[in-house]
Image (cartoon, rainbow, N blue to C red; front, side, top):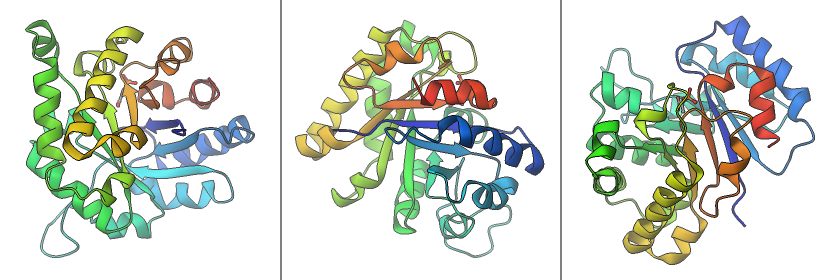
Length: 249
Ligand code: PEP
């Protein structure tokens, strides 16, 4: 009942020409696959051209971040409505790299989610624990704090525009994936937490993606878990063949 989402986070990789070439390669490899929502998140400068390149296909476009104000004296920032204007339908918010290197907090995540949804975007909201937090049994507490803060005062209606991505920081870009059981355990916890916060029907409907070294050879095991509804893919999304193999799991 929850349509899977496979989203590719291209991080700070690829020129405009390389980004367009990647989607041109990707489109024929996923053309018959309507059973998953496929999303790609290029760098800001490539968004508009990639938007033109995916037109007519079922690949959708995301940005990797946004600001929460609509306009003003905010040098260097990009407003959700401008991302929509560039062709985005999704925005990734609170990625661990933004939390780690750019001071993203649960409060800024919350502001960005509200602004993104108000502008008509869907938010892919990332949460996840560090290795030290997992090893000291803090995983559930960390996820609960991130979700309660990030999703504070979000209306029930807005939840239909939110996707959660559970990305254990120790699994991102490291080649170390969470086991199927480790990932499922946290996904089930997230769904129960959302049920506590906004009710079971919303929790049953919300899509929860796993992210952290997802590859063609481990996606299937993850996707057979009852609470895993897709993947947020970094490294393996940079090549059409591996990303298509994940999307066509
Ligand atoms: C990511 O960037 O969100 C990610 C999960 O990266 P990787 O797949 O490379 O671990």
